[in-house]
Length: 400
Image (cartoon, rainbow, N blue to C red):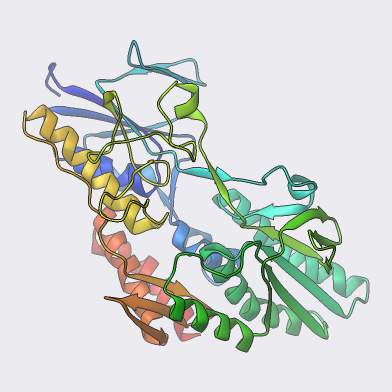
């Protein structure tokens, strides 16, 4: 590495951080260090399948060292304690520090319990891989305990009717029915609790209606417009006073920004995210860029932010990487433009709802298309040979 190489430190090994690092790895005059406390890149889009034992754990976790093997990117397993933006230094839990010329913050969001009583004690979070594996084990344990106690009914409650809540509930219906055959259980109930007036806020109204109809077909109960007031060991109390019994409660009801940017004294938007310009640089700090769910980006065409989806995080990460290379090459910066409004929502085993160019489609083929999108992403990480076994596992599940 040339002694004049610019030092880039990336915080976070999620979709945005990895995408930025892949771009920077191609530049010979840039030295890149990616820092994450986990050794693995988590494919969050398939966490709901891992939670229901539909795919192996290795399908959703990909070693960062494997992704960047033989590249110019150094992967550092550590936890960030603080960042001194004046000296451009990142302090780590190990006692080490990393200096930077450019800092990329791609730490994403954290689960938010909104201070609701009992959530931390009695609900399973569903955002990190470790949380997903704990939920996976607990689902089977719930059925085992019901069998041992001679309980004829098992109740699973999911708090939150966004993407994660709907995807998990629909897949759980399929998985729990199979568990009910292994453990003599007469009835399995799955319920989604949503504080707002509809599921999947922000999506096409036709897609929302179709998702609701599919959930009804799957016998997933939905309670709308009634916020959670308290979570207890055996159920959930809603603001209206309604009691929803639960043997297993999962929390997918919201997120909050990572606190590091606030601790750094960076300018924040009303949602607590770093305020960025159209090039994704923090306002007043051109050497600090933000990508992914943590970026307080506002689309100038719509006046709105972008959906916290993987494709947006990847596009942001790529743009951040490209803009750093453009600064090094003394070229003008590129402005971020959301890649589009197309999306696919899995709603049950081998069924998905897709919106493409404003047209809504549902059935098995949007589900297959989603798998092909995943395969394309895996190929971008480490090539088709290594990506194929993971993709084949997904295909096997579809054919089951």
